[in-house]
Amino acid sequence: RDKLVTGVQTCALPISRQAFDINKIKNGIIKACEKRPVPASKIEKLTDDIQKKVYNSMAQEVSSKDLGEMVMEGLKVCS
Image (cartoon, rainbow, N blue to C red; front, side):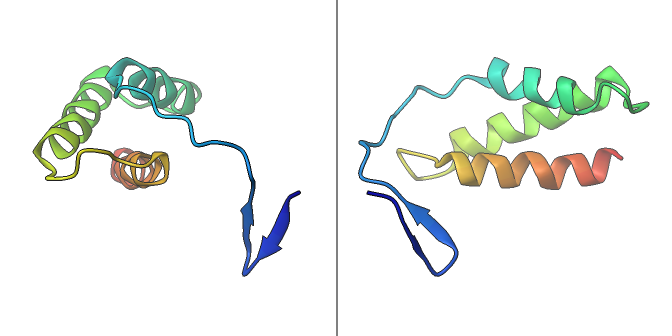
């Protein structure tokens, strides 16, 4: 059963792990920038930067939350 704990919803479902796929990140960024004048070169640079951060990190796993924060921080710079 779901319960609310300090603003974070917890669930008894198993955690899903997926291989890192930069194309999923890139497609999401493209979707987020559809109605904004963001050049393709900036999107490409942002995805390259995120990919480098992920591969250069010492962690074996990167959470979707961390990936989302990287994307959001990059989108702030692109805008």
